[in-house]
Image (cartoon, rainbow, N blue to C red; front, top):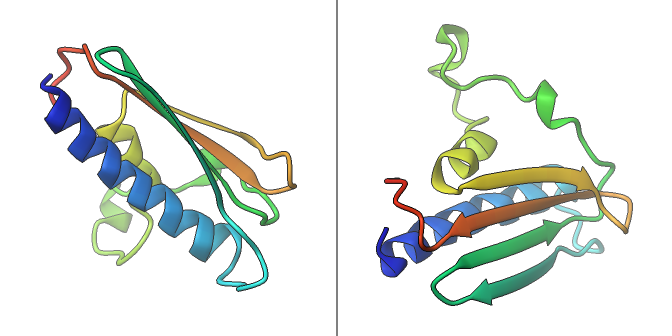
Amino acid sequence: MVEGEATYWAGMALREALANAIKHGNKLNPEKRVFVHLVLQPGRELRIEVEDEGDGFNPAAVADPTAPDNLLRSSGRGVYYMRQFMDEVLFRAGERGGTCIELVKHLSSRRAT
């Protein structure tokens, strides 16, 4: 994969993660923050962590947006998109009580996205 293309898809996944952290994690509370940490190893890997200050959630409970009953829903595709755009998507409890999502893009990968 061309590094510029990988950067584009990583940017899309980052926007989805930020939107979810703000809207679903922090519930649009202006007093709560979202933390972002990026590590770039040129030609190898981009690793992004996004952490909110919400109550946390169970990613396994997220409905499959490709299921027939969910195709016409106007929301619920963010986690699905992140998984499509990135090589690895990991969830864990955040240090501040919310959720931390880790997005990994292998820059030398041949995976087409």
